[in-house]
Image (tube, rainbow, N blue to C red):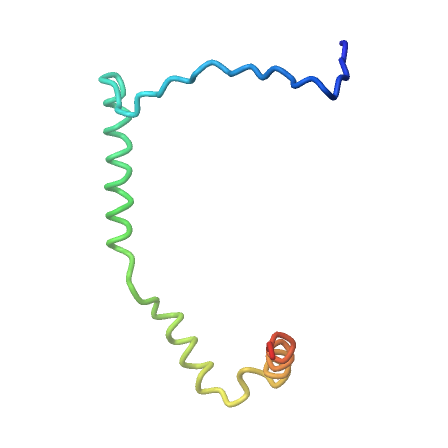
Length: 90
């Protein structure tokens, strides 16, 4: 490998060959892949529709924590106060 050093000379830049745009529409042979992906999407949509909007176990846990007078622990409150004090901008 030979490196030529000539700071007064502007190096030649070569352009890379143009890249053609790839076809984004599925070909006729891709119809099985398309139908498989659409059936997968339909299956996922069915599962999403079957998922409840509210998780009752989490609601019960939150209600229990909210009714506990010792939650959150004092050291949590102290740490949050310290973090807030550190990040207050005057």
